[in-house]
Image 1 (spheres, rainbow, N blue to C red):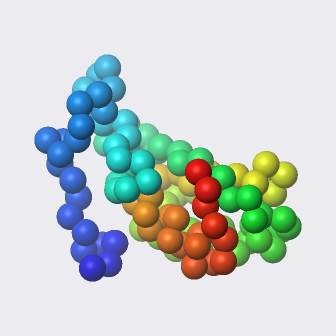
Image 2: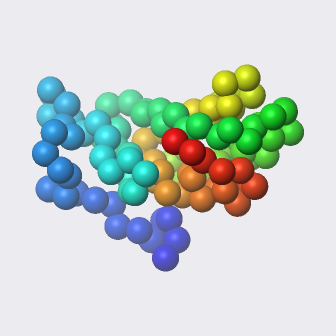
Image 3: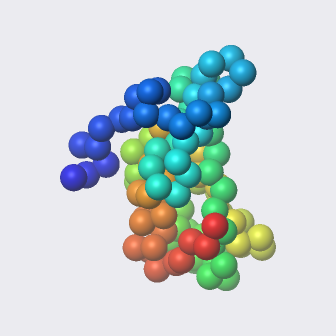
Length: 108
């Protein structure tokens, strides 16, 4: 099943404590499922990718992740070896898989 075919989780699927003070959804099931923004603006997922050593690495990761659905921005910092992915209703598993397929391991 591709990303577009996966069912979008409903609010009742969320564990307690995942709602913001205004009742909007913030984030859920990091590293296993979807990240929510619920129309309140984009969320940013920060990942550690220790194998980033140069601009070529950064370009490869950015190209791989940018292709994913709902990804609005990808920032790869070579110095800190971090990848920041912004968007709404992001699939963390797809992001990690894209980075892995580009040849890099995500550690956090």
